[in-house]
Image (cartoon, rainbow, N blue to C red; front, side):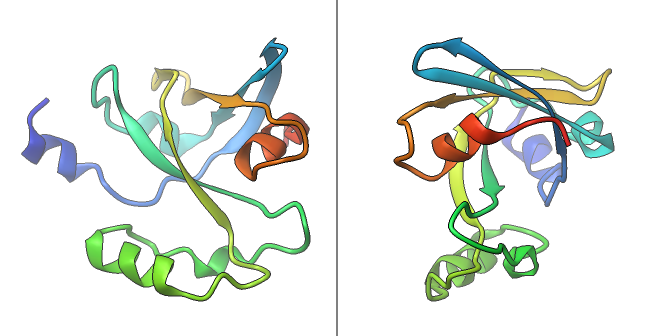
Length: 127
């Protein structure tokens, strides 16, 4: 896929956790699904994305996420003060994408209670 074709599918995609499994003692695989996952374009073996996860230390205000993460809106997001309710954002590589079933697998390194997304992944469950 060329650069211009890849940019056509940019935007915000939502999904829900449907499975979580321990792959190794230090790796958790979380499967997310939803109608948007079927629309997510394939961008090759190194397809990465930005993932917003809930905070574990209190409520999360997902309204702070821009509807589109173009360069300008991304810069505004990271320039916001790290409020106590702003969702945590991390970059991840797609482990496996199954658009026909609307599913995507994401692997997380498990650092115990440390870290943001890895700690979330260890607690993630369907729903």
